[in-house]
Image 1 (cartoon, rainbow, N blue to C red):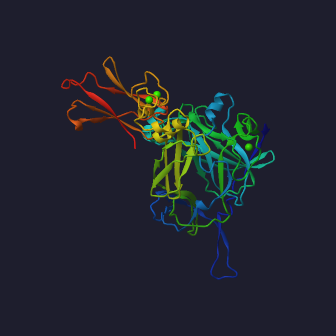
Image 2 (image 1 turned 90 degrees about the vertical axis):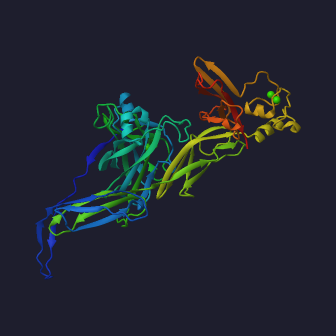
Image 3 (image 1 turned 30 degrees about the vertical axis):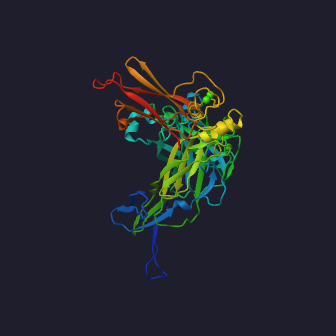
Length: 529
Ligand SMILES: [Ca+2]
Ligand SMILES: [Ca+2]
Ligand SMILES: [Ca+2]
């Protein structure tokens, strides 16, 4: 552990700003008067917009009203990434540690951070983005979730220090209420969500032009029930809010010490080896000394500065104008494919069409090869459009690939490979063996029925045997009380497919049947291309 001494910057000298000089038209010999300006307030409002292809403007007003104001708008898109450990394509989840959990372990962490050396060339702080991880589901906090089904607001704080040897000088600190997204209950297609948490990036914009040195410490802080600078005293979803801690090497900039990160505990701030090479994941962005001005049109953030220019008054405000991207619709396709020894990628179509998208295969570095199920996350982050979709991709077999494997194994002669053939003479055709995942080359007694009716008390249960690995098969359960009418069959809803290769899906049917109906008939429709 290496302890730091914290210093604070002196407050900005205001005296120069509060004097002004009147130069008369006489020119040489003009009398320069120094007088105190009258403080006035300038307000910047109407800051939240949605992209629609039109220019967006904030509303500027003053108190006293109608003072002349000069406004400058700086697009944040021109900021430079000078440090980055957040992956270019964000992961759905990370290894993480929470302030509440660390307090419970007696560690007393209030803040977690990293010491880093900046790359790039610009040095005026624009924003710090941090990767966070939330374990709380909407169903854990129903009252909060009814206020906002997307997440809950919680203040996050970013602190930036200059590092010089053992001394830290506070450069900037910003606290922003941040939307913490709920951990999803399922993937978008209803299949199982594969993590116990959800990761998200929180970007905190800095408005004051703070100049950074090459070596800084960046920290993230937030309050929990018993942790943080100002513990809240009551339980909340923030107790399940964590900071991502991974050992990713920086994509931009350098790690000040690969074996240490910054911690702020009851015993002060230190450079600690306790987490090994792990550290919070940050992206630090900077502006040049004189960034370009621009008019807000495209989605993104814009730093708006308004300064009163009316003679005899002084006042300045800075705010962030944000244009949020429009939602892109994302539909996943090729989610069921035959495993044939080569990597299989999914496809996605977007609306608007042809937007670029990124795919993350959960816990994998790329597209899968082997038979199995693979949770996938697709994101569109394309300037003025953003969207996402998730689901479970399955690599299995088709009848053609399944029977070809059995022919190649020598279990089935190539002359007896049709769906209607029965090479092992067990009374079940190759297609029936395919559907029930039995061996078409070996006669086995007592194979399971594809449709099974059982009664338990007042419940009738229909069991449907599904070979989930057979990707070219679809199932439809149907019911009728009139066998004489071929059009009288109606569809019953089957529960969604599950990850297991073979499953007995149960459907509960009302029983006793309604008084007017003396009998009902069920059938399973199996469709292949
Ligand atoms: Ca480090
Ligand atoms: Ca057979
Ligand atoms: Ca068999």
